[in-house]
Amino acid sequence: MARIRPILLLTTAALFAACNSVQNDLSKKLLQPPPGWLAEPKDLGIQAEAFEIVLHSEASLTGWWIPAENAQGRTVVLLHDETTNASAVHPYYTFLHEAGFQVLVVDPRGFGRSKGTPSMRAWIYDLPALFAWLREKPEVDQQRIAVFGTGLGSVAAMWAVMARHGTAAVFEHLPSLREILRESGPDGQPLDAFSLGMLEFAGLPEEVEPEDNAQKALVPALFLTTENELPRDRLALMRSYGVYKGDKQLWVIPDAGRAPNAMLMHDGEYQQRIVAWLTGALGGEREQVSATWRKNAAATSGGAFYEVALEATPTTHGEPWAVEACALLADGSSHFARTWLEGKAGSVRLRLPQEPQLVAATRVQAVLGDDEQGFQRKRTDIARAAATIAPLWPRIEALRNGTLPSAELDQFAADLTAAEAMEPFPARLQTELADIFARLGKVWAASEDATRKAQGVLWLKRAVAAVPEKPQLHVWQGPTTTYGFPQAEATDEARQLLRMLGQ
Image 1 (cartoon, helix red, strand yellow):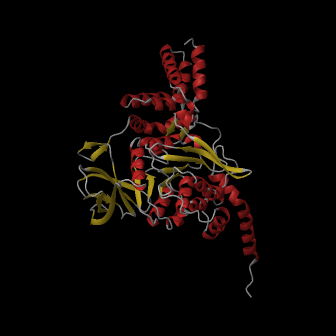
Image 2: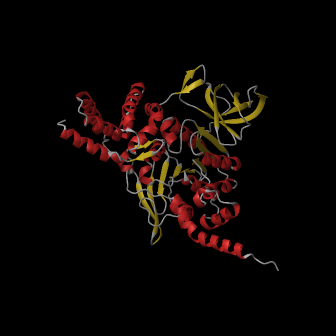
Image 3: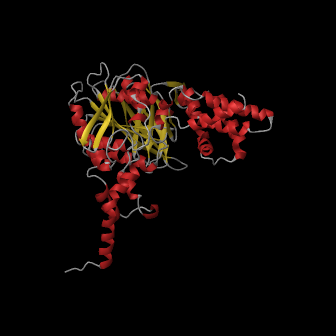
């Protein structure tokens, strides 16, 4: 009879002891309910019904049911990410509601006004109660329910459609819990396969990994990833997309980071693209561009040329389509090309360092002609301003955190002024920068130089003028998303300084 070595027995016992607490530790790490409460549908003039689904005496699910006239039963279940609550997702439910969909907005257990302790098991296994509640509503067409998840909300959405809840899905920023867990070893070192398996068994709900569930999901799905999100998460979405069994589309969004940054950087286009896809998936006309690739020839300076063949659905359309194709490589890097698609089919050529893992293409609706790139996006004011100020964002965050050297303030202020001269700042961006205006004004208003003091007063006045009428509705989906108006302390100080200066 084989003997178990004592050291192996001790190691296994220690690992099991660690597994006893890993579920709670993992839930605390992943699920971060924000404090406070911001906006409600009524603040935006939207009629909504608050609900509470009692799970037991100490746990519930709460949120809003937002009906829409002429929705014809089409319903979107909105599952937010792990760091927000229902009071912060009004940019999502507003555009969905305006497009004619009924929307169910829900807070998982322990988030927002929902009772209980947040946990990964509750995040997943409370969903049947939610969908059972939804099935009781006569205005909902059970064959026209889309589940729209972001972040860990997309993990829940994948589980939901795998379990046959919903008839369509949108997955935005779909991570792998297995990969997140793999990085949870001591001192940030990746876990070995045995330790990972034990911790996954102890810490994660069964049937939670998106890549596994994707192989069992059959409903039409739209996958959203961005050029600048964490490569680990983009690779996870690629794997899930690759094995997804249902009809699927992939939109790789350029010049954007982790959700909800694409909603800002592609304001207008983002909302339009999702609405068009949901309309098609829930019974309307479906519009898409399929893409396949083949290698053409080696490039003399390395890599090779690849041809991406494009085919439009519907196969006939009256005017050329502006199409953006993207090749995703094994490391998750993205390579884009643009073309005009006339009629049913066409192609575009890409030079790549290695063969692609996936190719995808999408129609860009609002465009400007451009001979060199085929076309340029027609951006809204807020999207253009966001793109213009993006290079300054590291210094903006440094100033907020008190780490921008004082010697760099003058140059930063000059660059900020130049950016505004290039692209005027809309009101929402000025609101987001209100604390930056206040910090600059505070420094210069303290100067003995009259000209510099006068400049400081102007910055302080800009800070006060940028305070929004409804602070709870402010959202800035930048590299770090702002919800509400945390700039209030800085603008209050600016107001006090102006009074002291007799302004």
